[in-house]
Image (tube, rainbow, N blue to C red; front, side):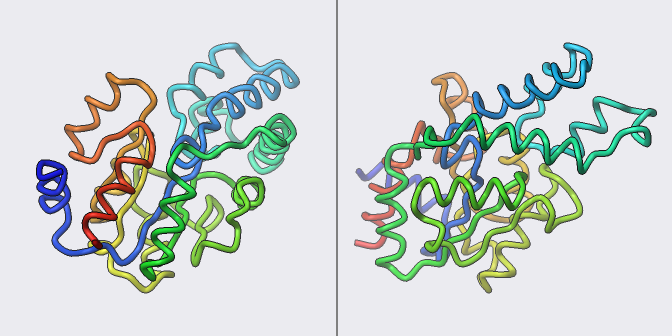
Length: 232
């Protein structure tokens, strides 16, 4: 564990006072559900097939920024709010009863609460989606601050959502440990001035993310072990 402790000490100047999580792709692997929802939306409105590729490659950004890429100069002809509500409704319908946290997440929450840490969510998703996922996981009352797409002006990779959570928690960013999975999200955490834990599915991505942070893992279990050592 000495190497792991060195990695954590190198990343953190002091013990974190808060944990701030992205939601989609980080706490839960919702990518398939979101892609199915985008497909249904594109099919329903007979949008070009290339729109799905744009949605796939910009996963982690908010819907409005994706719509900007879709429609370009024609953006004024489309009702972003209505399209976004429709897409997220499809997501919730397709995901009902299928939401599972990544291994170690529930145990990490329990440990954090036992240590008196503050807990926050910084998501590019809607408030309805955040409530839906946190209810499905049974942890909606565990979090002290939840910031969704409607609460910030700029989408990730801007740091706004993580800075907003830090402000609501009353904890300076340097003392908030941020958890993210997407390239946009990783940049958002670092630009907010938070130490970063990167979550990824593929071994190549886990390795690549070590360019951003030594704490790059498939799930939350290694982080839980490190936190227990840090607070032990």
